[in-house]
Image 1 (cartoon, one colour):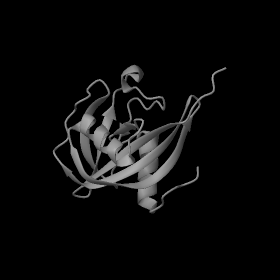
Image 2 (cartoon, helix red, strand yellow):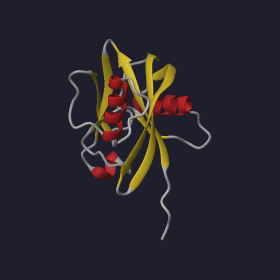
Image 3 (spheres, rainbow, N blue to C red):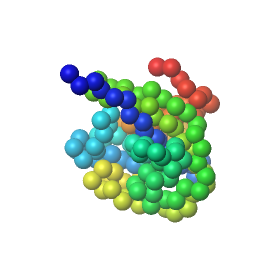
Image 4 (tube, rainbow, N blue to C red):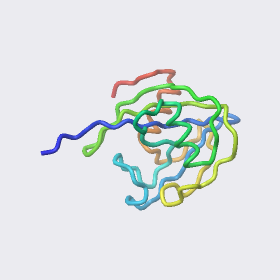
Length: 146
């Protein structure tokens, strides 16, 4: 039996005019492509960290690949231990108010649209790793034990 490994991922909270950017994951599980599932849910830009990348580099790369937005400054705001029966990821929550560009759907097979949402009026369902990053942010906590 093959031993399962823990992965590392990032979720990037882009904040502009009191709103955050979320993308709608494709309804088709094969297209929504995530070991943590989440098809049909709303998510932050993000993804798996590449070997040798810093958190900031990963956040810049994933945000650019998915939205076309260039992050100027980005910082770590939290860490979460995200698990489902088939996968386990450490999710690094990132935050930026300093970026250039407007969101574009650059990976339409995975994300069907990008929209800005007020923190007090978020869509449902939220992709659970993104939801946990938002919970940490709202509570001002770096880590919330689940």
